[in-house]
Length: 110
Image (cartoon, rainbow, N blue to C red; front, side):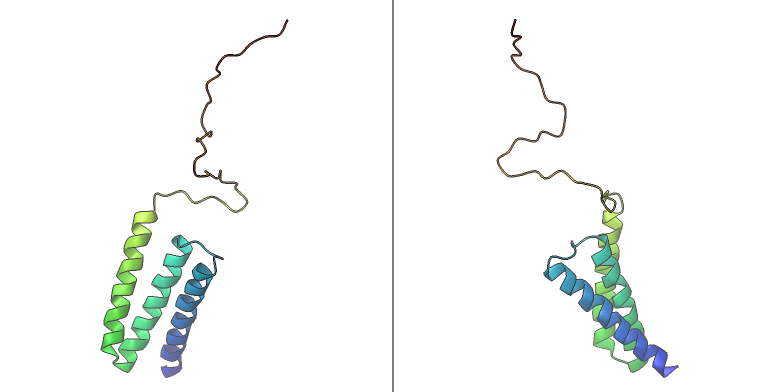
């Protein structure tokens, strides 16, 4: 059983550090996947910390879990593009042209 608690701790470390690395390197946006990895990692650290009686770690990871949980709850209505779905890019200083554009001064050549 002790091996299970140790595996939980190491799994939590891998989840949180992998998510942090991916966001820091620009491989992943700090979105739902990032927060989910943090939530799962925090749960694993809580289990491991309780087993070892590491209460400062447990409290820290309960806070980590709550922060990730609230972030996921707030993101629940936000649409993330599906894999392969193209998102329009809005460049600074360029008018948004994603909606209908007015036709101004159309002239016909005869």
